[in-house]
Image (tube, rainbow over all chains, first blue to last red; front, side, top):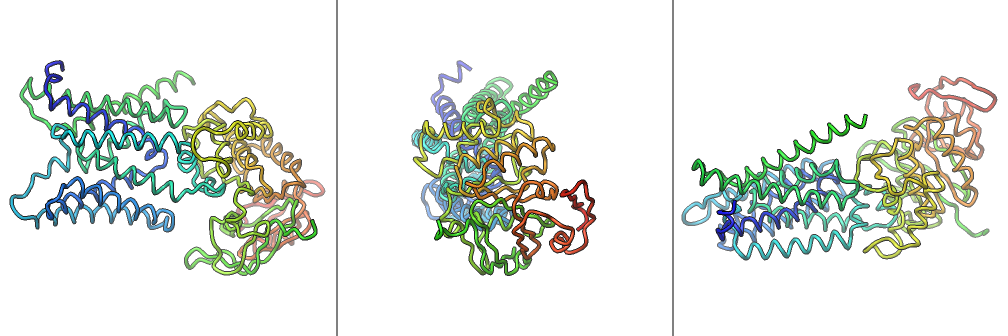
Length: 277
Length: 254
């Protein structure tokens, strides 16, 4: 690994992975306890529509992803409060329509068709210094929201109905949470791609959950597990590349490492539970 | 006190989920300090009735008033114990923090809870005999203990009206008995509305009964008779008497 650490692009990738892990750990914990994983999946795929629009009209595709992600989060957030029954259907539509728009926009774009693999499966080795700054800013915004609004956000996640009854503005908080989720999802597109975003948002948090007595502890542990997944996944990609000469994409490797950590967490939990009994 | 409005009043209230009618032209009122038992078949509209009082649902027609105000205006003065089965019992939250949610309606929402709020939460936990449980995560509690946490959370609102939706449906009878004794002690300073299938318990503790089955039949006395049950459930009930005031209705007799 020491050899890889000397390479600037590897350093940037490492920093990007760790910054993404913070967003994943905090927002992913909300996603898991509030059971909105399908919403975050929908937001990721909706964001792809924005990527396509960026190519078509010639602006930064990630900017398009942010726009589409935020707009979809607002739409789903409003529907969430009012039409609970049709929500799953709506999410599926946003999910598929986002992808369809993205593919169509890119087909209509002039010039060479861009390589979409980096958007679909991520390529953390391509991150720019600007990306690192934006990821840092998003982390600060997420940490500030989670710290300042910890009690109302936790109340909404734990029991939305009761929170509403005592006068907590649950709709506003939900819109905030979904907007932060959309931004996290866009951030993660660079790391693991549209299709795998949902994994990095849920797996580290799910692995952390059985070991955490409180939501903040779950967030810290999920961040550590997400960070470990990024580092190990990146290192594995580098090692396979310089060793046996196998070039593998980083996104799927990071996701598989996190799934492995989840398996370890689950097995350890089963063993300690058996020991308690 | 003569001019003070009733705790809860329904005036010609209609409610339906889509095309499925749930409540038809419901009119009744609950006086302050009453301990009302709400009885009726599953799907008969009991929970809907509570949600209308809480302002979580809006009537299609008619008017609901809580302490003389529209339901949303009475928020922060009403405590609510939801059905326990709706719960994620593994949510990573400490007992005290779960109870402190009750205090979020007042004071500042950011930063840690105030000392005053923490005292109110601890007081409520004492009332349900869970004083030593404040620092435990709810995932470590038994079903009965978690149920009491939900009651403590409603009490920490320091409500004028307390609504309970089948609070003993999944706990053992001893826990249920303690809860009903607590509810009796809380009155008459607090209006209590209790949804329950347990006719025997209602008979022993409440001072008025409402039967809900699309309509509401309100009875200003606490004795449940076979006739009253037939009225509520729409057909004669299989009623077995155990002692002088105790009746037991079989739920599946709908």
